[in-house]
Amino acid sequence: MTQARTAGGHAMGAARDLRGAARHAAYAAGQAAVVAHVVAHVAAHELGAAAYAIKAARAGAPEGEGEAAGRLECRWQRDQLPAAIRELVLDDQRLRNDICWSVFDC
Image 1 (cartoon, rainbow, N blue to C red):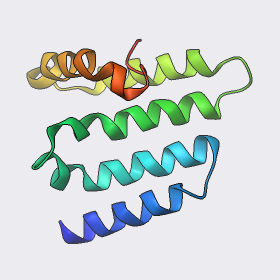
Image 2 (image 1 turned 180 degrees about the vertical axis):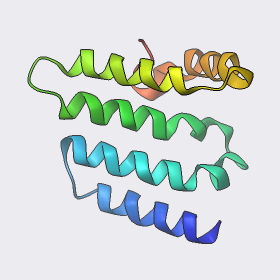
Image 3 (image 1 turned 135 degrees about the vertical axis):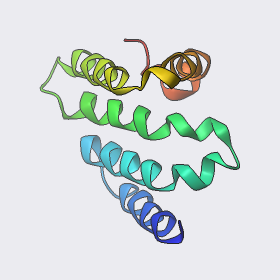
């Protein structure tokens, strides 16, 4: 847990100096690395990695295709959800969409 949290912190720190897709991808990696520890304290953080991955897909897409790329990433993520938690995650996305840059509108 400590190693994951440290690695996540490094990824988040590196993200600050980046721009565009690389920045969002670094934040997604950092969120994913620290989420197990953070969720134990603040449940609202569990969507962070998914939201940053969608932002990275948007930012890395060719000009004019960002929204479509974001929707495709969002749908792909949802397709990966196990049935046992699917509705819980989708409800959480609906509830927290506004604080997650509205990336879960897919």
